[in-house]
Image (cartoon, rainbow, N blue to C red; front, side, top):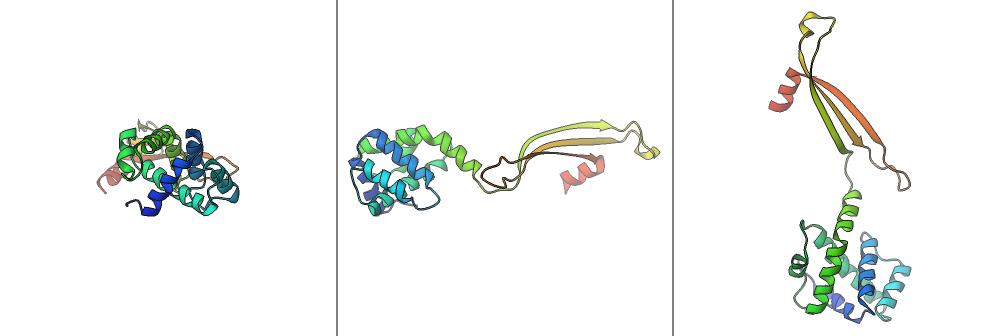
Amino acid sequence: MEYTTTDIAALNVLLEAQSKSAVNDLFLIAFACRSEKASSVQLQAASEMLGGVAADKCQLVLDALKNVIMRSCYVSNLDANRVLKMLPEEISEQLAKLIAQIVVHHFPTWRQQLLQSQISGPKLLDVDWRGDIKSASDLLPRMAAPTCVVEMKVQELQRSKDELPSVKNVAFEMSKEEINTMIQG
């Protein structure tokens, strides 16, 4: 996916920002509104940071910054050189270096937040297993039979924004035949 001319023009608007910290704050606003349009309060703040730029132009700037953030978060082992290679060549070198510095600084936090907000099933937190030999049973053939006991900690799906997801312990036992079936299919 290439940068559009609109994205390039919007990134060049960052040159009008009041300071480097204003550009940093614009990135934080863009990340905060990554899944929807920016609110009027966010657009007003962005406009002030860009020296009074119109709200529609601010929205384009935030959309371009979201694009940079999302491209960056899909790369592992991100460093400033990789960010520079991802940016369009049409923006100034000084601006590109500033963008790379900001993205690299915020990358660990952004990536962690994106992973945590990802929609998925229950999350496996920990697995513990051990092999046992049955020493007591009602039936003689079950005596001295090897088994595998598996204990897992699973984080349930988050039900609402205001509560932490619960952690559930799941334990089960498998016989030698069940293990073979699981491994061999």
